[in-house]
Image (tube, rainbow over all chains, first blue to last red; front, side, top):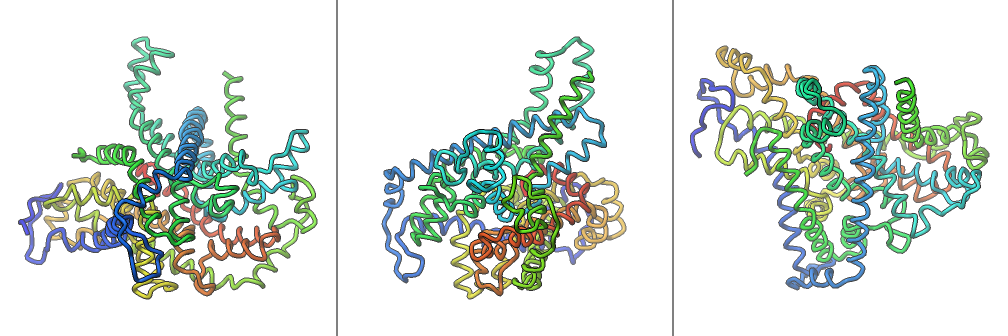
Length: 306
Length: 270
């Protein structure tokens, strides 16, 4: 073990009892390695095998699970549906929270507080329980939404039963559940704008479009990037619980996505190898966004990412 | 100017109302007489507690609350302690591979659970911990969020205070628990609550690992009730769901300011 150099901010007198960082680090690190990084490796290993979760025998199949998935039209459909969830997340968890935050900030502070709490509440609710409530709201014919639409004289779709409606209906629940968090991030980012810089630009005559384009936009860029990335990466798992509770992927698999599909392969169809391969592909496809998000966070936190 | 603010109010008011509508229906249905439930789009007339009475008589709610409480407290206290220690290591010391180790914590936040749950489940099963509290709690103790948040918070701690404490001979655990932690109490409370509410609402992992009825947590119990006899009994189901949601809501409303500020400070998904 190398001798410990000076502290991060404090260069303390080191007593003989002082054991350095490792006793503090090891507990958290052990859990992290045991329940995140070992599973990641094990998952990669599993993806090269055929296994039904119970048999003592795991047959090595090389990349067959991967080539099987890539050739499978069902997998292509899951990919398309995943992208649709992401696109809807950009509306509900990127554009909408920004709009709401801008509107909120035009109010007196006391009211800002109130709306902050009101918009955040769904984030505090359990997704599974909330999905049950939405199941009622979406009920065909007798549910409140159906009755309301009929009252307005419109057609009444079977929201969760009609393949054309089901995915947007599920995505709405997921977006609703995560709106509050993204709204809060948008609020914090806009509030943190350096007023002095904005005022100085105003004094220099910047207004309207130039003010927005050349002053506000660059200043807001980190917040916008974070929001965008959070919307994209959270779209990966945010639909999971609504799907599980409301549709189990149906009707005809139209509300499933890569995440839910991988879960079903593993825990419902007991095809551990296929599930693992699908999970690896999922992580691979979103790696760009994850790395980007990581770099943003670590920079904000004071480290330059290597 | 007046016109513009009227539009603002209308936009925010309608959005807030729509945002809260599911909760209004949840509470409304749980209190509505059975014959009101499909009578109109507005089941908010009449008042009865019979759904609550039915659910409380039918389901062992006390047991579910106990299970959820043990699970959620185990996860949140463990998360708090582990991240406190690890965050301290990251700010108090400099050591080899420091940045790489911190990156491990940060990246763990972005690993989707679908990659880790199957291996974790197999591990828990192999250790014979299915349907036990250790099996439920231990795999949830990956403290990426807490380490990130507290490290960021500790770094902004006034240097002079720490140097003074060091001069007084407080280092190691004493520096952490006598100086840093007490001075960061609001953030620690917020982190604890965020973890507590998060664990209280966990559904997928407890549903996999604790699948025996006597080990159900609330979210799982309510969902299984919906999947069984509660599926068409919307009144009792909503009563059960209100009971399951209420504790998290009350905690949040009580500590609203601290929790929201910490969320803004961290800017990371919990």
